[in-house]
Image (cartoon, rainbow, N blue to C red; front, side, top):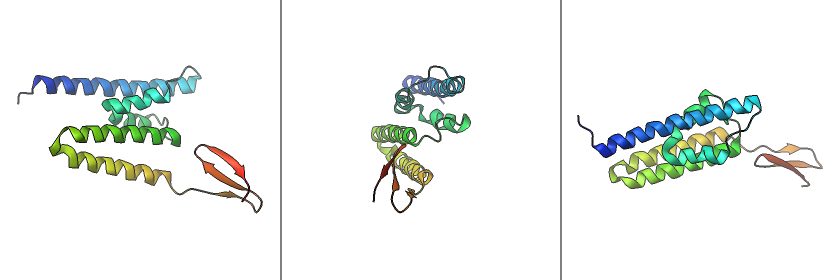
Length: 138
């Protein structure tokens, strides 16, 4: 089977982007453990927009990196979703498959979040606002 030159270049570019994404996640994990300079979350999210999200999702699980930080998970999921919507809009025959995958990713990220929890006694309650918790009176 002969592949069009554009398709071969596109596939090679995707492979390079995904290898680079896995390398960035590994480097960030290594730097986090060593206490050195880290890769910014924005740079990691940009890899998802540049079609590097398959390696990013695998790297998060493989290296156990950024898997507990909910704010990053939300940003990365949004970047993956935007990339999937863009890819789905390119070809009419792939739209339904891409939208099904996007729907699956949204449902799985919502299932990981779980229910919101409230803590506190009679006089105070903890209100969970992202990663920071504030004390407030009922």
